[in-house]
Length: 395
Image (cartoon, rainbow, N blue to C red):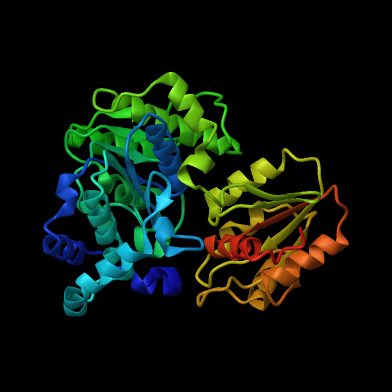
């Protein structure tokens, strides 16, 4: 499972997902999709779109990954995770073919999402790619619109070492005669997306710039909102929306779509913020957002073992304190290793046995007018949410 062991579980092939869907009588052929790829912003854009269409009265399916606390977060209907009974029934029904073709965790989950959305007869299904796009398991669908949110360096062992290679993988979701919405990307990436769109006669649209009122914090969310609104505008011929309902959606994205882990405030004094940003582009956005606060920063960070920290550490402020923990997952990087890598860049830090101890230590020692940032991986935010749910945090 990629969630647990990383790239060794990734399959660059669509054979298994095609076999699984054939076994299910191809539920994906009964659905209308919006397909979303990109280095960052996929999850936010998916949840914004779900909120928009929910507010306008449509039944909305949404498939995203990874989950934070509960597996069922990946497959939602109008913001509500699918039922445990459905997951159990699905896996039991597919047991024989799973044993026969040995699909990956991700392939099974994608097929599960298609089946769920078809059974629930959703009006529209929003589908986020797992990795890349061209050979991603989700790429057997024929969407009514495709979105490419951003292009940056992440999962380079699987997608390529250059922006050109990575962009070509993401642009693999572009389908013939199907509109494409592109977010804030660099010129090199934009040119490639534009060329692929022309080759496939796919109309190219840009995100709508604006200063939108929303419950989502961060300048980058304005770009994600701009993509969602551009997409809804392109699809207005089939899914009509109203300006008032769209604004209502933007102000209630978290509530409507059950969205967590993006610039989430857990405490106000001291200010404790958690965010799932975990790559170079993500950390650039994080540090840009943090710079708006006139407070001293305290970072509590945990990474996965295969994360290239050489792209991330130079972005981080040196006049802050750093605490290192291991995410509660098999492929989490040990804090001693993280500490050594950070020290090689001239940044000192402390190691802690786990996130709970690190948070309690910082919380007890720092003034109430300072800021604690928790991040480094999806898994650290998952750990933080579990501590919150179990009332194990000191606030």
